[in-house]
Image 1: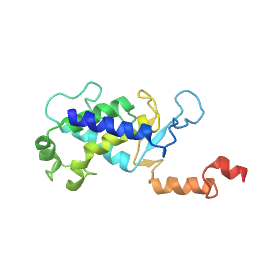
Image 2: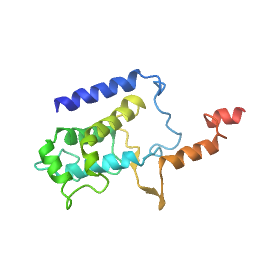
Image 3: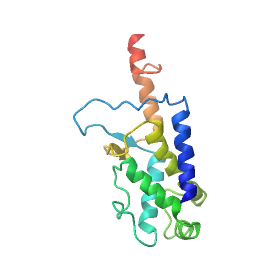
Image 4: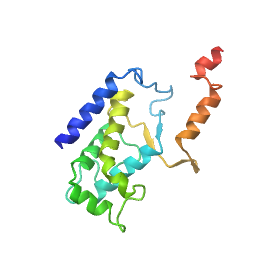
Length: 176
């Protein structure tokens, strides 16, 4: 648990001191109260699904609020709790389940299992310290598809590029 805290603190410090994200909170689109949703796809899906799977497969009690694993729309607080579970689990317990062909996680090949603690901690740091989302905001929707269509980050990048005419932002594109 102490190693996870040290790792999480280092990731948060990196996110809050780097210029690559601009040190500004991510803009939340306007709309009625609970309308804002940010889809977590691809790597976010695989890592958070692993965390949920690990919570369900751990021996002993599960954290309050995560008894059934992670909700589909978790808050950063719930993601942080899930990271604590994944990162505090002994390698013996985690690998016994994760590397068992009959019980392993569907999205996690054996070579990725040791990375999942860092990855879930990185997601927490990126969303909270990097992008500045509120810890209790329930705006993250973990999805594999939207309206029955598979989504990947490359499609998002393509659509963004298309909407901006290949320029940095829609505003910049409109000004050109």
